[in-house]
Image 1 (tube, one colour):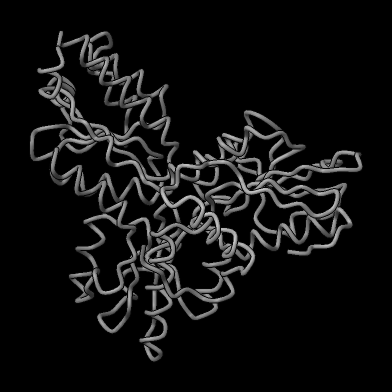
Image 2 (cartoon, helix red, strand yellow):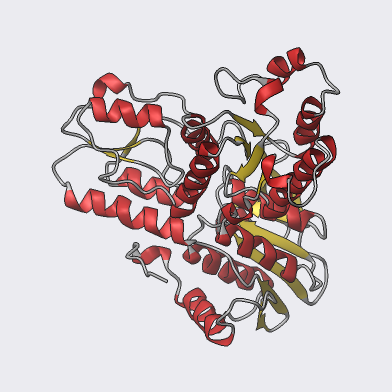
Length: 400
């Protein structure tokens, strides 16, 4: 796989060596057992896969190259490059400004942007409407386009099955940058609807089967369907794609559920199923899948608690937290500074969307076993810093 030129301070010699050794020992990536690091009485259980993925490293390389190649120009990002505060702060320190926030609210007027400016497309991609705005300003969107190749894969798959007459069902968070971009590209080809989760999918199924009045659909799914969407016509032939950072298992569950609904409602068989349902299994992101499967493998060990490191608005990181929370106390932290002491930890409650402090999170024992993983937009250097901080709190030597 291609290697990327990203700022050296995002790298970690420790983590790079661990990943390199695991790659040698497991070339086919079939071993999802964690890496065990022992420092005296402290055991760190490190997930097999974590941290920067291909798409994130690609985006960072392109963004910093844009800064390097245009020292005398104003440089803008449509929104956050990725959902990691350190990377975004570093870009701001280089003079890069954000045109919108992560919800798409305008922070800098389009009137201020001129053809002399550089505009970077973030890793989530962008909408066709914004691409058109840029082209009308004689700014080529593809010049510094950091859209993740796996997001573009979803777009390409949506376009292909859309042209074959399928309506696209997107499993994603309706306000997330990636989902907004995928929705824009998909609805340009075919009717499109977004579902947040299985609960909303089950509601959609009731409109497919006619158990709910179609008139209610337009209010219940307001803001989540394409212009001119026709419930009676557009829900007879569907395919499911996803926001690539969602729980892969949940997306597959949603796809399987809707497939069964179509199978039963239209009285299909294995030969006629394709007339009403498209197989879109190949749109799941490998990195999201690997990181989530690695957490599942990690959770087969026993531990006192888990630390998940990443940006608090990172979708893929929050899903790793969800998985860990099912098994043991879990703390969603941004960096090592969240580990205030052995008695106090500052962490993010993504259910309530607030930062809280918890006391006495370190067990009152002589030995500690702690699970550690991070999201796809988290630099390896942060993971090492958290490990070093844990060693400091446990009073052990951090000898690698």
